[in-house]
Image (cartoon, rainbow, N blue to C red; front, side, top):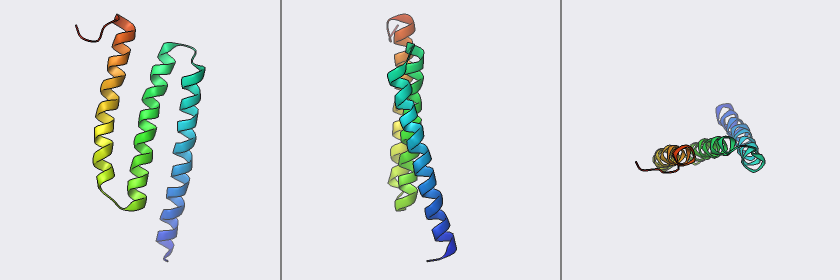
Length: 95
């Protein structure tokens, strides 16, 4: 095992831990609130954190399929955040 491989493993472990902590903090913000805007932002942040975890998993396993999955999740996350925000602001999604 070379030094570069062990450094990559350590960096991946640290990144996994940090993104997982960020995910837990976002979940805490989702529960605590206090406003609807905070909850929308927490859901969007959780989507970004989930994308980060999936990318890290793809790097750790050396598979490219995870990167395609993250693109789909990113598109769905963006659309759902916009739709939810429009629903809260206007009361309807489609004009």
